[in-house]
Length: 209
Image (cartoon, rainbow, N blue to C red; front, side, top):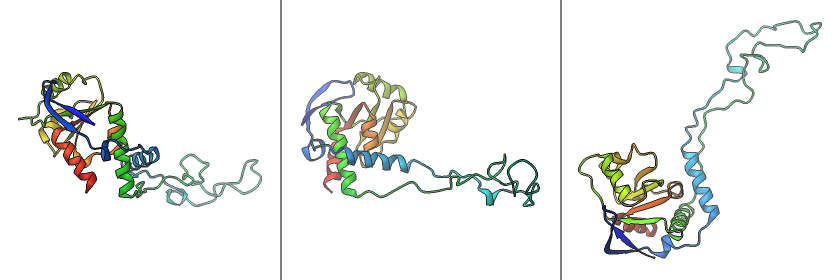
């Protein structure tokens, strides 16, 4: 697939970029995408949730009422989960939600997501941009020139560009990441995928490595 390269004014230049089929033209694998997105979301979870169980509640261990003759159910401890302030039954404990996926499967998932975007014509190639200083208004102007200011966008740059990142940080619908951090979730979560000219080659090299 061959795409035109746009400049920061939003106009197509004479340059063209050829997207290789091994990355942007594979047969999408829905299950691989599902597993990779599930892995990404699982890794975002802190897993620091904790509730005290019966053995961890601070309180008296004496029998709170006699066994029989009260007309109500027997109760042996104030820490009973049925009482207010008692321990929780099988409460959540700190845990790690991450799991392992093979590299080939994750690579297939990313290629499938990129192929989906290519099929739906949601990929744009932009000339490499460098901001002299962090400036949100300059980034907003770039979005307007590309006519994607109303869309959820993902900008992929070849290397980490701090000024570009800081310029987009306050915008809810825009995200900037480097090519080596490209993931399936971010690709699918964006309505428009904007690849810097240098990022295309880096993405292809990462897939062929």
